[in-house]
Length: 280
Length: 279
Image (cartoon, rainbow over the protein chains, first blue to last red):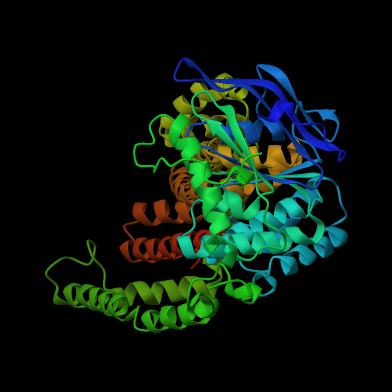
């Protein structure tokens, strides 16, 4: 369990302490997350996995400050989170690009929102356009782009503000399998440069292992931290690592965790934890 | 498909990089013979009119010859007589529509953005929108006289409500997801408006403007026919009173041309502001 781990020397960038999140749906109070505690260190890439409806996206929105916590608290960069702010930037699952703005215009938006002068905003946005490999499409509109390219814009829009913490809400979930693999590699390549603290929510276990330093498994309804796995695969990582026995051991271990405690995972293979080294 | 591929290849399904040029070529090829049938239809219809009128089956008072109408139209144009009346109607229409645009968009935004403003105004707006605007014409003439002003006001109230109502619904239907995104990036209120809410409402506003233009044209013709001293509607009513059917038809053609030009302009605007929808 996470609580008995000694405090790391590195600064805790994100602290989630005994958090309860409730929301109302169709007149019912739903508890999405209950008694959840976790922390993310500076420069760490953490993936949160769990079945749909386990509250992982809700948790991410709460870290961003988009939704309030009912009890407990969340700290980002040493400050209590009460609303969105410049320390955090979100990469949304469904793109959420402005269809009437070009790629460049979309990436400039957060900078304009902070009052960065137009010329400087353009320059910084253009640098990000290049970084995500969309130079030729800087003037294209979102509906002229493929899903993968739209998510690159989405990523660039979040990175352009130089956030302390990058929050990614299943950004590749809507992509086809092939594009998703490319994008995972791309994300790591881009991330390698300055290794910004990242919290990545996904339901793809292989995606979580490939990307993260640590994979947190949430139980569903309400979401609680089930277990965490430290992924001891050296960086920089390439997609080929997904075919190594070590990777498969991690996959089996996490699958069994979800299978054993997740509830209705009838289709999921339940297997014993193979590698104890995979478990923190 | 392991790593090491050039960045641009990733996330790009096969063939997408080259698409834009292909798409243009296809659209152009399909667009070439587009107007042939329409052209045949119009020329055929007008020829049928001319032949039918020439046959003498109906008296010229009911249906004058197209050639006579065109000659009258030419005379109207070359004598400058039409221009003077067109100008009067144009001033009435332009003034009224401009006011309708400004008030309609501003109040529409207010109603769309604030439920309090909406509740304050919605019954007035719905009731007035449902009332045939022409019913106000006699009243407006008493209030504002038979000059340009009464027609300007009539155009204003004719065009106002479609613009106002569609602007309000355009603002109201702003995507919640986009607003959440803006909130997440701490985009200030005013900029959310300028960068997200307004651009999203533009297609709605333009649809309202198109409707408003049509209603405004009706307003101007009927208003001038009821009471005025100049304008196309006045000419029309004058020609009818003197049984000058050739003139009536000539003026209808003028009005048709004006109507088509204005709606074409609105469509062009729509396409201009909606260029991001293309492809």
